[in-house]
Amino acid sequence: MDTQDPLELRINERLAETSAPADITLTLPFEARQKSRLRTCLDNGADVGLFLPRGTVLRHGDRLRTTNGLLVEVRAAAETVSTARSSDPLLLARAAYHLGNRHVALQIGPGWLRYLHDHVLDDMVRELGLELCCEQAPFEPEAGAYGGAQGAHHDHAH
Image 1 (cartoon, one colour):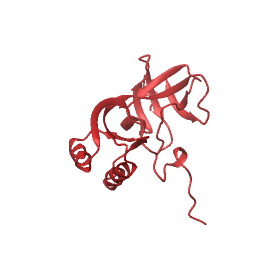
Image 2 (image 1 turned 120 degrees about the vertical axis):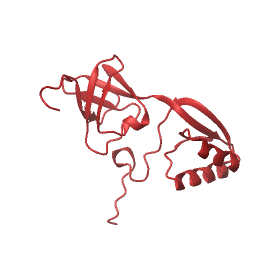
Image 3 (image 1 turned 90 degrees about the horizontal axis):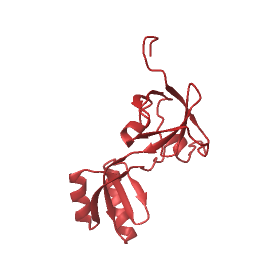
Image 4 (image 1 turned 180 degrees about the vertical axis):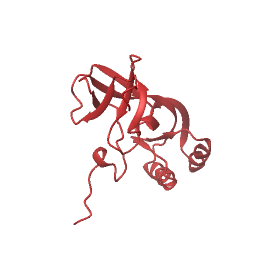
């Protein structure tokens, strides 16, 4: 940003340690937590600019540091999601396969799958035989096989 920009608070560092007590929180939906450059507001209403390395995906509980030393805790905002449930692990695996084949970001828990609400996907999941509900909940999808710092590293130079 140029010197005439009134934005004083800037975040340019994600900390490796997530247990440090935070001074303030920043609640964002998943789409915004995928942006490395973002102008937004902290939960106390203060304007802040996010300047992180390209490809950074913020996760619930991450700690960030502002240029003036404040520690910021990232929180996943509640958003409209579809949660599919089944006690049948094969049925859940089948649904995960079909959703993954459509490149849908998925959050996976014991006995359930969650994705950002989409009525077309909801119809497909119901046809597979899963119970489905649309709800407001934080969305924290899997980082994926190549999730960088968020996932396990796999070196192809065996």
